[in-house]
Length: 193
Image (cartoon, rainbow, N blue to C red; front, top):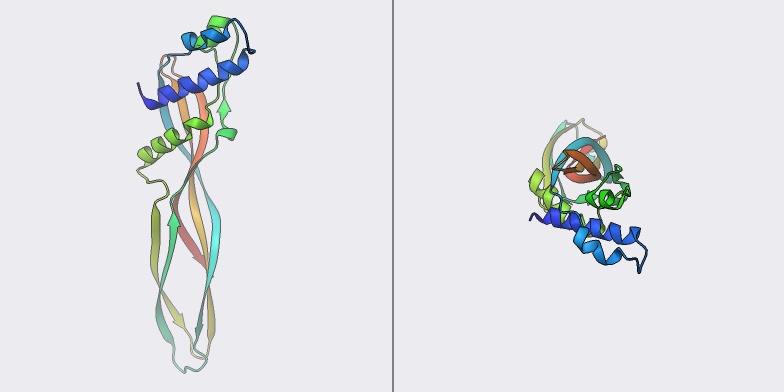
């Protein structure tokens, strides 16, 4: 059985144990009636956003020069590729699970924190990224400085987050049961002023 399916079944069992009071007659049956559904997972990219991560200032002094200066400046910065999953922001649609149906109750199940590492692995696999991978951004910039000038070049660094949703779909009924927001650092770049 797929690890994700096992994780979902575990999370469902945890949700059931919260629905039934302790010492309930039905508590001992939790393992027997836990859902054995097959889930499919889908990944949807939604938007991108920018987040400032720092500023560098390069100073070039040509006040003592009587000629224009052309300079190539190498710009580089290290960054870590990061995946973030927002379980607290996940949107759950009300569902009749096999548990709820058999007990005559409507139950909203959410995925527990224990599933985060499995979902991170699935995201990394889907988008071919390595969690916490150290990356280096490098670029050469050609600058022209007029004679007798003092120039400050401001590099405003930003990371670009790719946002999306992990969608858990009940394979039997082809119904979306859970949407979990995620984001990962796609790349970094800078604005120059």
